[in-house]
Image (cartoon, rainbow, N blue to C red; front, side, top):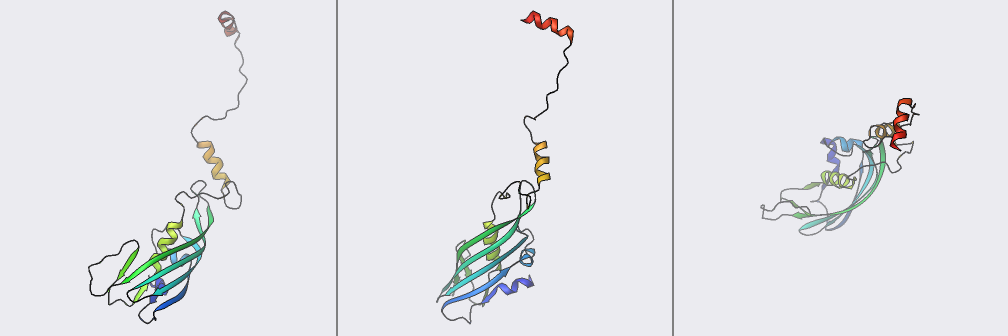
Length: 180
């Protein structure tokens, strides 16, 4: 978690108004989160922090590319993302009873900095598609063609079988004449 310290913003020394921050997100960032959907990527985070008297409004602009595993052929492929999110951070005065919600993060009075690594991580993972597929199935650059052909062979349903010529047994020919 030591590498996530670079995502901390000491807000107590900031004047009221808008402040800009830049962060790089790479493989080392994703390795800090044990069960991350995304393991590899290269993204750039532009953060606009609007500090006000009792709260801060954080505007995240995340863009770049992350590597995802295709659910069909199991090969890794690049997935481009452009994310724009907003988070409100309430600077809690005397009341320590309030809890965080999805839209609002509550900081206690004695806190002097906010670590945005978890927020960035959540925004990136939420941008990953629910069903992950190569954009161009069969593309030799990413898609594993060997895996796709194996899946087609093992797929349930009617199989395409080459019809073999049946050698007619002369005993059955006589019965077929009766049927007509």
